[in-house]
Length: 313
Image (cartoon, rainbow, N blue to C red; front, top):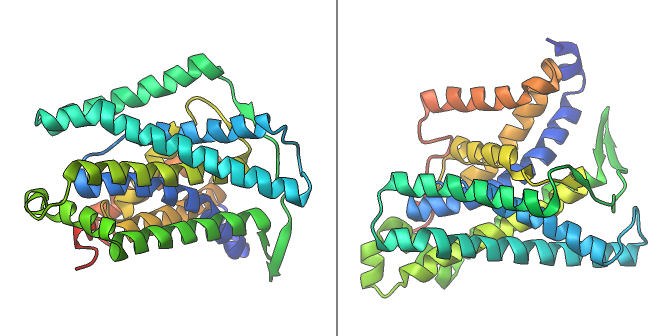
């Protein structure tokens, strides 16, 4: 146990963890939105994220992106990558709902059927991209070179870390306002609280469900761009482990709770970095799930434990 390294550079490890956890949080929002309304764990959401990473790669290749481009080109590539990733992931998420889940809902299929379908669809999407794009890691251009923007004591805060955390917080805030302040958000909360009563009040349940899949997909696409900036690679199963961790983050914060997903993602990222520093990087995945089990032993509904339907009266 390397406690000297952990406590000697606690600020640096915390910043690293927050940046890492921000991506988990954005993907976790997709899990928590769907669960909050349908009580369904959409394991195919990890592949929605994967599709977004390949969309970023495709657009950057189309524009002939290179390492560290000029500022104007950089902005253009980031906007194009974000638009492509959100469009691809959003369309994939909606397609997943229409093709795989809507028919099952109409048939009143039991929850186990939904779960098996989600897992099967996740494998199908992953393997389809494995056949199409190959099974090896595919590199991306490093558009933003790591540069230290701020130094506090022995803690260095890099530009990519600031971009990742700020972008995640802004998108989380936007989603929170959308759910709590808009007519569409009221529809989402109404269906989450009582689908039958919402239908009697004129809320179109199918449209609400499509909306939450679309929102989750758009956020997964944004997370895909941040992943491309931070890690600079992708592969056919890039969403597998990340999806498990994002789901863990959603459960840790309180699945069905938007702010819980953010909190869970950030905490999970910090815990992983702390664990890797204390032991080795091989143990960071283990530590994340151990923390989840410990938290759920004492608080089964997660840290915040509030459902989407009760987010705001």
